[in-house]
Image (cartoon, rainbow, N blue to C red; front, top):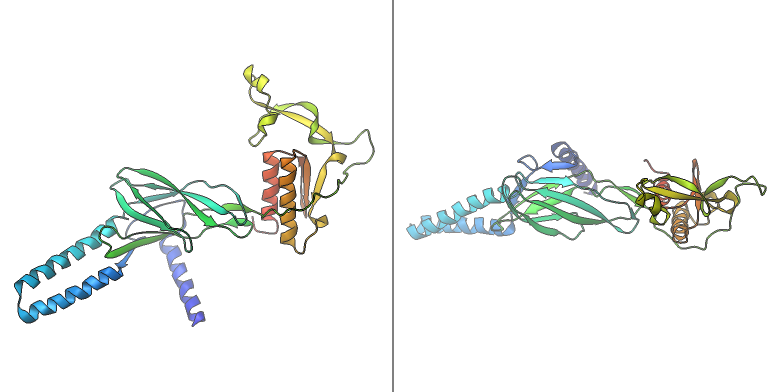
Amino acid sequence: MKLLGGRATGLFNRWLKRRIPAASQVRLNHRQIFIIPTRAGLGLLLLLAVMLLGAINYQNSLVYAVTFILGSLFWVSLHHTYRNLASLELHASGSHAVFAGEAAPLQVRLLAPRHAHQGLILSWPDTQPQRLDVDKQGDRRIDLYHPTAQRGWFSPGRLRIETRYPLGWFVAWSLVDLDWKVLVYPKPLSLPLPAMRSEGEGDGNQPLGEGVDDFQGLRNYQPGDSRRRLDWRAYSRGQGLHSKIFAEPLQNTLWLDLEQTPGVDIEQRISYLCGWIMQLEQQSRPYGLSLAGVRLGPAMGEAHRDQCLRALALYGKAA
């Protein structure tokens, strides 16, 4: 039974991928929308069948009238439920990296170019549903959250959007893949910092890395540079935005090496490295990162931190 269920799920997913391919934006139409009666709708159908049999048996015109009125209302409700999703546009907005175990924020933008959409429900399996309305010509943005467990690239899968408007007799839904990709950093673990490891020999001619001790000059501002290093005086004189560069001997720089990091497995060692990076950033200390085939730094600041965390997140995984 499990084998048959797995094959059926695989066939359905392949069919769904062809019918509703992944895209950063989707406009719902008859190809993407599915609709069936709810329990209340099935109960009403059963009631209408019983009422129709009674009207035929007793030739009661009043029961005939009530039956046909309810049947017409049932049919009109189907079209209104479908229309409540039709022409709705969904756009995947930006997201940002998170640490493993945190909920990834995923923003979706909803546009209603033709008419209002009421009683919409958005969710993934095992997540809290979000309910909202979108006015005619409206533009709504909503933040959805999906839990993460492992480092690397994370995709939340197909988002379910449904409605039971107006009477709850039908449920119309769609399963859209908005092609979100979120970078998940390793979960940082606490461990005392390792001992300082020298990268150069001698005392007077050691190479310099970006640090915090000696002022070396200015360079053009780069996204991610610390605000504390911005040269506000030069900026006030109209010379543009520049960052101050400091340097120190590389032998005073802490190098973080995966091969020399303790841990029971590779994931724990990577988590320790992640924790050390966060500690060193809080202490404003320069550091370098050494992985198999990857060598970063030494430096410090948001840009260097993000580069190191990205290398740890994707280590041993397809980029």
